[in-house]
View (cartoon, rainbow, N blue to C red):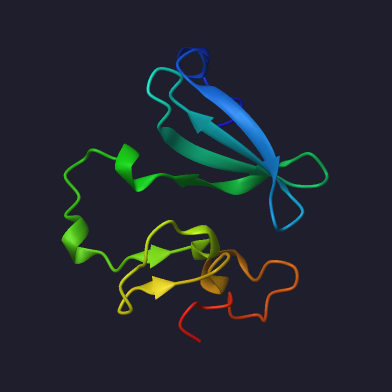
Length: 112
């Protein structure tokens, strides 16, 4: 996926910020409407993380989202209350990437 194909790169803008993990996060978004499309992590050695985080709202392929069990990450900065029955983590959910530095190893699950 990286480097991005020229036709895709020409349609996206990117901003970069440090991640809790110590990595660098590249956040790709539409410059016309501002919607974030995906995030890609860069490790301290400069290599790309072997995964990207695609924003669910950017997917239009007939997925029935009602069948999915939502997992909300980085809820410490949520702007609204999330239902208690959802899996909510203040930082990254440990089953995805492991705890962020300073985490309790459980992703600081919000309801705990």
